[in-house]
Image 1 (cartoon, rainbow over the protein chains, first blue to last red):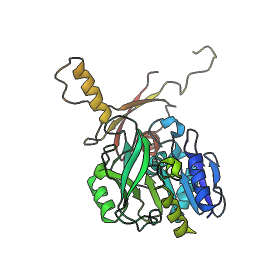
Image 2: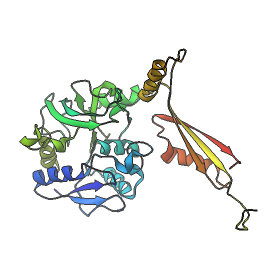
Image 3: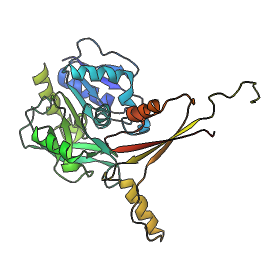
Image 4: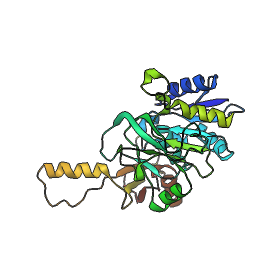
Length: 221
Length: 91
C-alpha cells in the first residue's frame, strides 16, 4: 500500500505515524510538506498526523486546513482515497468540512494525556475492520481541544448512519455522546482524537492501535 | 501629508471582526473566567462567554462581501461561531 503522511509546521506525531505505517505495510510512507500542492502519484492512503500545526493559531487545525497540500487531500478524499486524521489531523478534517462538527476546548479545561478505553461502535469500516464490533480497546489520547461538538441533528445522523466509529468508554473531554472517532458520509475519511500510532508495539503499553493499520491494509491493498 | 510625500490613500481603514461562540455552544473558557471572577469576590455575574477580536487594516476599497468572505473562509468557523464586522475610517 502506497501511503503518504502530511507534515505541517508544528506536526509532532508525523514520524510516529510514519513508523507505524512502515511497520504494518512494509513500505515507508511519502512525507509530504504542507507547501507541496500535489500528492505522489498512486497514493492509496493519506494520514494527517497529530501535533499543533501552525501553533494552533486562530483555531486548532484552521490554518492547516487552508494549506496548499490540504486542497490536494480534499480532492483525493472526494475521489475516494482513504484519509485518516489523528488528533490535530481530526481537527484539520473538521476545519476542511470533510467531517462535520468541531473540536472544542476540553470540558475540564485540562490537557488530557493518558491511555483511554474506547468502544468500537462500527467494525464494518475501512479503518476498523481489524476489530470486533463492540470491542473495548485501549489507546492513548493527548489533547487540549478534543471535545467533539455538533448540533443534535448532525449527531443523530452520524449515529443513524453508523458513522460514529469509536466512542470513549469513560469520561475524557466532554465530547457530545462520548464521540472519539467519526467517518465521512462516503466512509473513506475518518477522524479520531486517540493516537493509534502510539499503541503499536508491546513497549508502548498497548498494541491495540496496530489492528487499525492492519485492518486498513487488508481492506485497501 | 505623510513624510514620504505620498498621499495616504487606502491607509486608514480598519475592519474589526468580532467572533463569538454561537448560543448553546459550550464555552469552558468562559466558565473558567466566571469561576475566577467569583473567586475574586465579584458577585452578580450571571454568565461569561469569551470570544475574539481580529483587527484588519484594509484598503478602503475592500468590499463588504470580501470581508464577509474572509470571515466565512477562515476567520470564523461557522459551525460553532458567529461573526460581526465593524468598519471604521479612523486609523
